[in-house]
Length: 101
Image 1 (cartoon, rainbow, N blue to C red):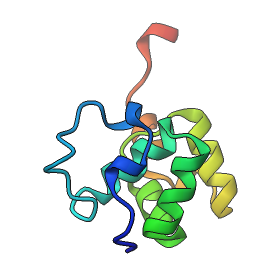
Image 2: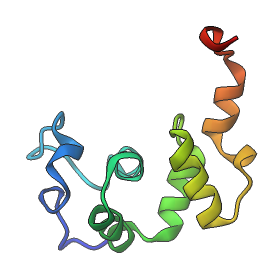
Image 3: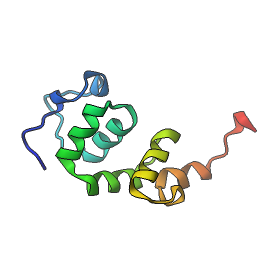
Image 4: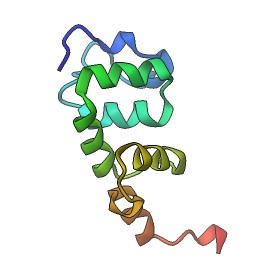
């Protein structure tokens, strides 16, 4: 993990609800990666690649409970993994969307 990068290097809109002084980038790695994947800008993406590496991003995206459809398609294509292998895809299939039925 690259210790030079701090939470303050990322876009302010990503972590408006987090106490930045108490936030540990290593402890909350999966939360951090998921937030950047879904709402981050290109600069944020480049920072998490440097901070954690592609293998950690892959692991976090595979185990995320929820990812929006665009992010799921992106990481599925990026890592060349079928969408059905992602936890968020399996989890979504368990619950029917009653509003659209």
